[in-house]
Amino acid sequence: MTTLVDETTVISEEDINSFKIVAKNTNRVFRIRRPGEGKHDFTALYDINLKVREGEFLTMVGPSGCGKSTFLDIMAGLSVPTSGEIYIDGRRIVGPDLNRGIVLQGYALFPWRTVRKNIEYGLEVKKVPRGERRAISDRYIELVDLKGFEESYPHELSGGMKQRVAIARALAFDPEVLLMDEPFAAVDAQTRETLQDELLRIWEETHKTIIFITHSIEEAVFLADRVAVMSTNPGTIKCFVNVNLPRPRRISDVRNSSDFNWITGKVWRLLHGDGDSETKSDAPRGPSAGSGFDSAGL
Image (cartoon, rainbow, N blue to C red; front, top):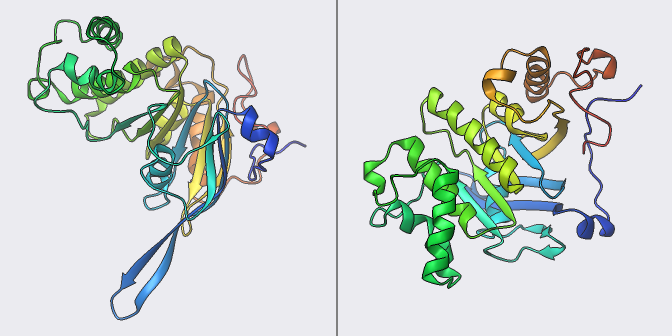
């Protein structure tokens, strides 16, 4: 009987050059002060091992404080691991680089720059000629459905529109990997669903490798090829969940499907320390039977 959950990932030297992203034995320890106890080591991340294929959409879900954002900061090159390494295309991450685009919860747009100028910022850093910058920004303005708002400023946009600008800016300079840290958490539920659909449409067109952090189990399952389920104290990847729901997906089509509900229920139980003993015989049956997991976790 094959298990539904892969709880271990072993990283070989061959993996480093075979996968788009590889995290090997990655740890992050902070030195903190506790009242009356002096300084202590706090392990935010422990022994993170991860393999991501090119073009894969991986989501990471876990409780607050499990180290999701810390891991993304290390991937972005904004922080360094205490030990271990992360590689992209076989090259070790040692700092920020234009091969990675970042989209954060707070938009982080330049208020003094228009939609077009915000999207063109990374292209300016890369010293792309002005005419080429305009052609590229036109493409991404259309891709995120903001045509007609090219000369608008961030204060003139809704929250959902600002997040579309942030996504377009991250994609415009053509990064190898897109890192997204709860990018839809600050918008209302209806806008969030719209942005989820839009992100999948963009991903289907661009084929970018995406790592997406969220607290929402439904969002994690809807978007992903795989879900990395994290636990805390210390923060580590507990297991990987394969999401074999058919693509292309739209939230209105999958929300009430038995497979979607079964997988989200499974992730919920894993997050709460249950569900480890199920096998493939528990998987839903029908046209998309087999949705769920395999022993490889890939």
